Image (cartoon, helix red, strand yellow):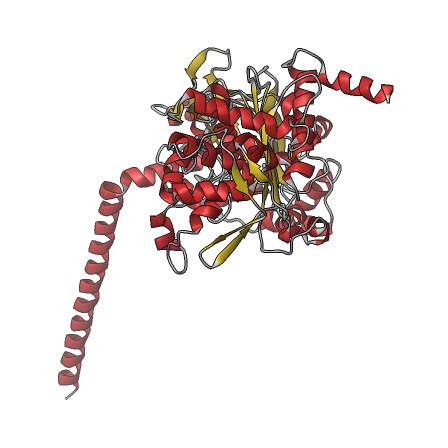
Amino acid sequence: MSDVYLDSSIVGYRQRARRLMVGATCVFLVLIGRLAHLQVVEGDTLEDASSRNYIRTVVLPADRGTIYDRRGRALAINRPSFDLYVTPAQVEDVDRLIEGLRTVVEIDELDATRLREKIEEPRGMWRHRPVRVARDIDRKRVALAEGLRARIDGISIEVRYQREYPEGEIGAHLVGYLGKPTARELEVDTEGRYTVDTMRGRFGLERRFEDVLAGWNGFERYAVDARGERQEGGWAEAALAGVDTRRPPRRGHDLRLTVDIEVQRLLVHALRDYESGAAVVMDPRDGSLIGIISKPSFDPNVWSGRLTRDAKRAIDENPYNPMLDKAVHAYYPGSVYKVVTALAALEEEVLDPDALIDSPGMYEYGNRIFHCHKLSGHGSIDLYAAMSASADVYFYKLGEQLGIDTLGVHARRFGFGYKPGLGINGESAGVVPTREFHEKHTRGGFQHGLALSTAIGQGAVRTSPVQIGSAFAALANGGTVYKARVVDRITTHGAKVVSRYDAEVLTRLGADEGHIAAVNRSLERAVNDPELATGHLAAVPGGRVAGKTGTAQVRKIVRGHLRQAVKRFRDRDHAWFAAFAPYESPKLAVVVFLEHGGSGGKDAAPVAREIIEAYHQRIEPIFETTAAVDRKRERRRR
């Protein structure tokens, strides 16, 4: 009986042994297969990962191109910036390190706790990744940090370029600012041009010309030991065999603009008494912008890597919307748009400029009454008096005869409905209303009376200050609508021209010279007529200015001479004034837009006069006499 029991035990033991051997063999085969996979299939990948443990790559940032004004004055520059870092793997005594760092930069208890966590928590290869302690420290602190490095391991200083805008808020919408790339931008950056710490254009010309200005980062690779210290010769040299160890950075190109910073300053000064608006100064001979500002502005130095929560909140809560570029945003133009109606009527032969047309205080069309800004009306007047007095009923009648589609055709010849060409800040093409437009977008569809509102720049019409500038520049130069431009050329750092941005035609008025001359004469009367001129506050002693006021109604409000003073900001009319000067041989086209600023004649026109006089005095004489001096002498005589 015992022998049988012994035999069965031996059999069971052998069966269990076989199972263990099969299991061990399977495990061994799996390990062999896994090792083969790692060696053959993933060998290159793992070798690359392994090499990163002892090969350190340092990005050599490219120097971003400089932005200059037309006279070579810098508007956006780079300066060396020093950042203080700590590498966790190299830190032996955290308490000693933090105490030492407090002699270089300010570190409170909360900062110390966070820094300790960043040093102690990383594991593996993450311990070799430097942690930034302070950004953009001054040279005195750099010297202190260098002294500390000699006594305490783990401290390093990295140099990068910090974008700086010497003019601050002046012209900030045009120049723009920088910001870090988004995760999506890094994902689609197949060329490896950006890193998480790289700054790129986020607004204005910085954004539009990012590829031109940014340049190309370089790199340097070197071997490090287990402590992260750089090694030379021996095994380090062998480890770097076949590795591209250095690529120098390539500096970005420079932008040379058409704007003049002195003109920018005088525009800002001219708008000092108004909360919100824009101003444009353009050369009518080629469409180049000499000045362009939007108000209120912002500080691009703060937005380019130094933006705090409080500063961001202040911008977001500002009711005047500082981040909106009002120079390229479209608004109701009001009566400055009447130049479209006047030229269209002349071209379509429905108007004789010398013919008298009755212009009362109101005009009944269908079941609606269209009012003039002057309740008593203007009587029988010709084109010159109508433009001078801004007689609404006169232009209502022209709009009725022309129809909305014909007005639309001529508006597009002025460049309205097209983007003006700057390519920045979401520039608007505006709105040129037509029958089709109203059928799609207006409740109740198209009504013939809509042509009357369009004729005086109300209704659905929208234009930007830059568009108005291009339109008045076209009248000044005889009929050519140029694309607005602010960049004159792109150059290397050594000023070698890479490409030029010459004048480019957007469209043409295609109008009879005599008809353009008649409209221009009416604009000259609108400033200088001794009795009727609504723009008389833009008149310059010793020179002739041609221009047009515009008061664009935003909401339907009670009429009367006190209406602007008593209304809330958002309910007040937009104030416009557009002009060119001198009338005889125009060198400037000037547009002033005051968002909810009140009256075109009382508010915008004096601002335009100040701009024109200041330009004549401080930038370039455009009149035969010195206007501002004449005005001062006039005051002394009084």
